[in-house]
Amino acid sequence: MTSVTSLAGEPGRASTASTGSGGSGGAGEEVARWRLVATATGPADRAAAAAGVRQAYRQAGLREPERIEWAASPRAAVRLLRAQDGPFAPAARGASVRGAVRDAPWASERERLRARLGPRGWAQWWGATGAALWESTEQLVSRVRAGLVEEVAEDADDEAAVRVLLLDAVRGQHDAAWLCAFGAGGDSPLAGLGAVARAAGWWWPYERLAVVCERPVELYRDEAGRLDRSDGPALAFPDGFALHAWRGMPVPGSFLAELATLTPERIRDEENAELRRVMLEHYGYDRYLRESEAQPVHRDETGVLWRVPLSGDEDVVMVEVVNSTPEPDGTRRTYWLRVPPGTRTAREGVAWTFGLAPEEYAPVRET
Image 1 (cartoon, rainbow, N blue to C red):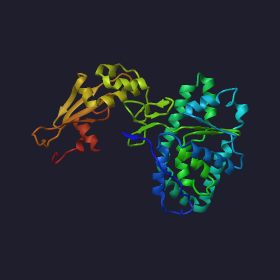
Image 2 (image 1 turned 45 degrees about the vertical axis):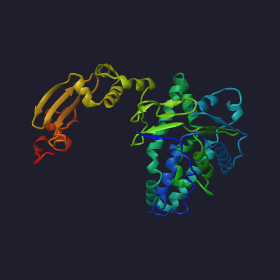
Image 3 (image 1 turned 90 degrees about the vertical axis):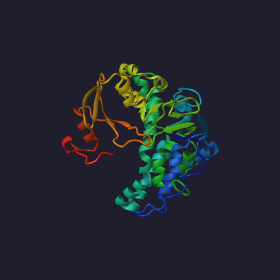
Image 4 (image 1 turned 120 degrees about the vertical axis):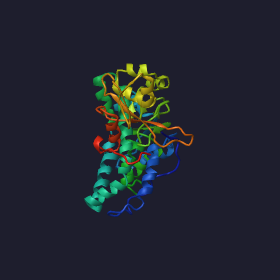
């Protein structure tokens, strides 16, 4: 598990002026800088973010917003903007200008680069820059949106209203993939957007008002870039808005607190198959087999095949094998290999781990 804490620096200022067809140039350095932007935690640089907001409005040909207000999280921003009267209501803030501030310059820069580099050159450039950040940032965006709908919406009709409001948001630091590919510094038409992304989180631009969010205070991800933490929120904001996840799968916070006290009986009693898989991964399949009174279903010279039926889910099937090479102290280490639920013999299971059919598995010497 990788913990990302507060990050400093002014990444992402380079432009695409030096990009050439087929060559990545400084693409690797740009990706590294924008990865820091996408995963940055800690207090926003409010002055820099406000300056970026005003620049983005000017670059869109709009008057600067009359007010720039701050919210501790996207949840706090959504709740402010749902008011039907007061300083954040539609009548006070005016219409959304996201299309002018973000979408129009976005599309223009994309077409400019495609025209300059050609379809093949553009694909190569995207592959060397934004594509390296796209999947992980989109996962974050999807999880934040889902978490907002779950926490804020009161019923199905309300859910639709919340989703519409989310369409007005500019994703700030989570737009890192596209900002990396297009360039968002210097005299770039996206310079204002880039400045906000480097300094703050999501933000909502309207005719007379911009609401800007703080960045997360905590972000935990696994090696694949998925939200992942077993002892607390994987993503958390200053006001308590938080998302819990285990290897990318959303889980309730109360569920994670229970992992430290798991028993085979509790795992078997869990009705949600996905949560039960999380329990098994955390508890350990081999430990579960040892402690759940599982019975071997087959044994041969390659090992022992174990099977545990699970209600509403595929069986847990594993092969117990013993390392033929002794440890320095003379003992032999036991390994547990999870194999497909349809496995019928230990040999078939061991052969499967090598990508072979049972009749093809005939090691000359085991190590």
